[in-house]
Image 1: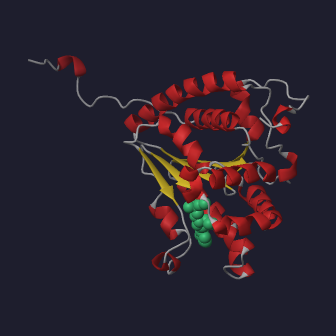
Image 2: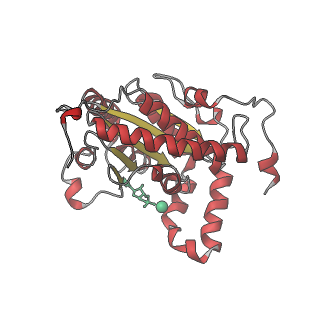
Image 3: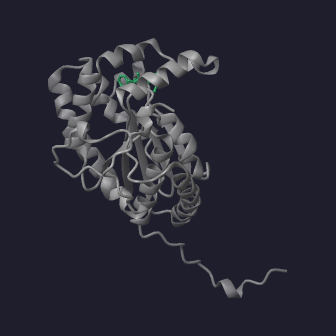
Length: 285
Ligand code: AMP
Ligand code: MG
């Protein structure tokens, strides 16, 4: 462990687990700055306690998803964004895996296909939105259309500038049609990204994950940070909030994401449907 990881912030009093979501949510119309979020932060939690809490949270998530499925009126959409190496895949593996696969779908959004490019940018996204009763997870999302697209000028400025409004309107539609939307931004430091890339180079089993294209993105970090900030400022809304997770410490990341998912699912008035017959009158022979 590097010394960097021992430099705990003196100011971090332990924050109660139920308060974690409030502390990480970006307020609508805020002047959010990424530099104000320390990617090392742990809110006074330590690795062992967080691991125990995460294990408990996974059980709770399984119960909540069971209710969501049985209830059948609401959907949950979880969108995950991060820089390369930010931990999107491992968050899905370690937290989202608490859900029963029957009732949960994960969609990874790559560079759009020729067919996808012939449609509006939300076409492929809307098709992957979860149905009532289920959870849909986006590994990257429509936000790439104001991130990589903005940073690399893949469309004219006038086109990507309109997209913030279009995204808010789209998300409002989903939310008014009973989809609860949760957006997670995993924030890691440039140094942590370097260590994770180095690991991908050193570990033969991880070589496949290393993408030379990610090196170019690393040199564009300032432009990406600016694009992330605008996205977080303009698109964290009441109906579809962004959460920024300090994600250098994987155990804190998993704990925080599981805590947020519990909070969001608990906002839904989930109930088991009333049987449409007299249960007592049924006699099994
Ligand atoms: P990975 O998540 O490592 O498999 O990489 C997927 C790649 O697809 C990333 O480099 C993204 O930036 C890229 N990508 C995803 N969505 C879009 C989009 N809408 N336009 C251009 N590139 C995209
Ligand atoms: Mg990649």
